[in-house]
Length: 273
Image (cartoon, rainbow, N blue to C red; front, side, top):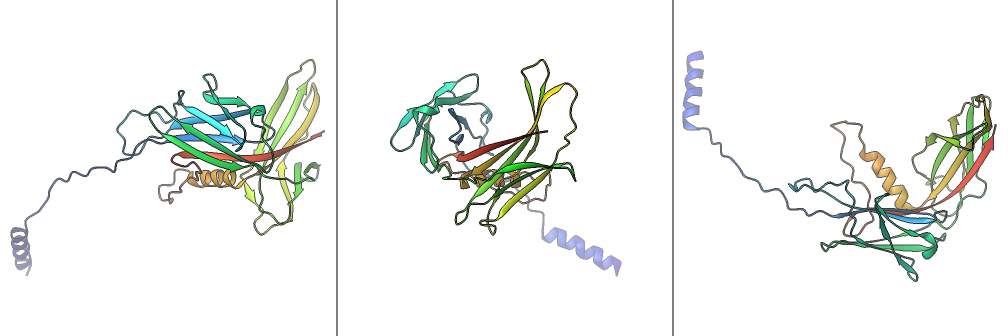
């Protein structure tokens, strides 16, 4: 029986010889795109725009996606007033005083960028119209934490983000040390419209020797949808090195390009200890 099987295998290999052939597959053509980042808020004194370019996956060019484009034309507008931004070689971005186009809550703004090689993008975003008026912070001695709390604005979609810092000022010095304690991911009031929001973060209020001023500083950001979607998808796209995680497309509202143009309001509260 074994002899018959061997003979059958030999016959099959003769009748069906191996058919291997080298294939040359051309990768899809993709040109670099402008990559633009700009975040605006009424609290800003400077409008700042970062302009770079992407490097397509199948590109063989020596494009450095981290290198800024320094010879682009950048225009910022509110639909009535407009200004051209100037490249700052130290900060490697384009800037202009916010006083040239006042940044106001509830208003829509427009961004246009073009490069000498013919690429151009456009984007628009709206600054949120309002934010909670009762934002505050308290120390919670029972669990050595800081409570940050506010009431959501009813009958509108809102997006929030929270930053918490520890502040110390030492005797004989005018310098203040600012230590970041927490910077939350953006959250939405979906299914929580009009609700009371409260976040707790560990915060040791032990007094440091030689300090003359000690405080907790909390900043509440009321973000727009562009800000929320960009940062949420950016976090989801980071899979921690898991090779089996599904790819996530990072949100972009840049027409003919990549990146984000987004806006937010912010309010600050400090509490000494």
